[in-house]
Image (cartoon, rainbow, N blue to C red; front, top):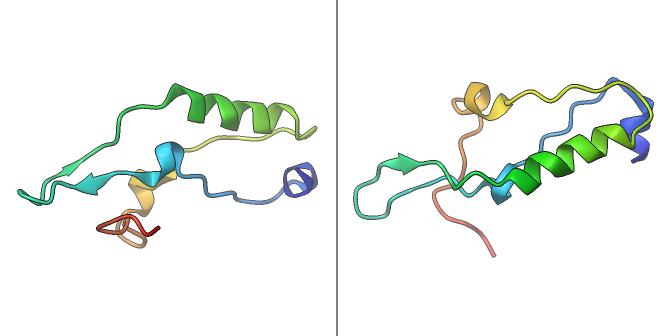
Length: 74
């Protein structure tokens, strides 16, 4: 919460755990199921920060520079 209350920060959050992965058989990418609770958690994070905040879907814009891994690491 300290980071949010200071303002002027970018926080990268992977909704649904960043689970968009290619199908192992076809190699085609499919988005993970939409998780409304992940979006609600981001909204609550902003509400409790005490300063104005904005949520932007950067994952589509950042795919070329930081694509998700082929498989999840445990």
